Image 1 (cartoon, one colour):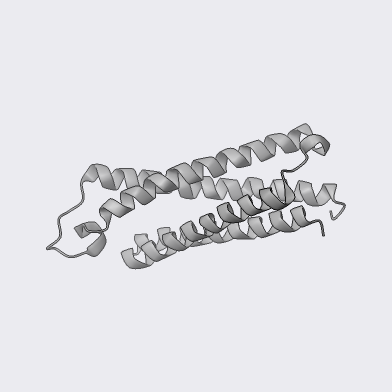
Image 2: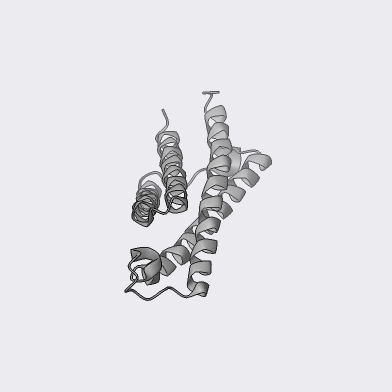
Length: 157
């Protein structure tokens, strides 16, 4: 198997983990389990970090993809995927920074002695979190199309 194709297959499964843990985090919060929500989201963030580090290594060792052999439609699918990934990263960073400020509030600790979080902070965290999770799910859908095209061009499909 081509090393680039092997790398993108790894990246696809990494993104599956990101979406899976993020979805599990949303479910945990809906059930009122803030601790499990935090752990699931931190695991999803760690998988994103793993991808970013691996991508930098991939660029250093294997370089960029040669898009000259790609059809125009495949390039559009790739660009939409990249836009979804960028949205996920930006919204995830906003949600994470809000989460840091929520850590010591009643909303996170469930301790009535702690101060409540401002409604605006909760709204920003929730909105950014939903945007990040939705963008990750869309990125995964488009990644499957990108990867299928790569497998097809390699003669595997």
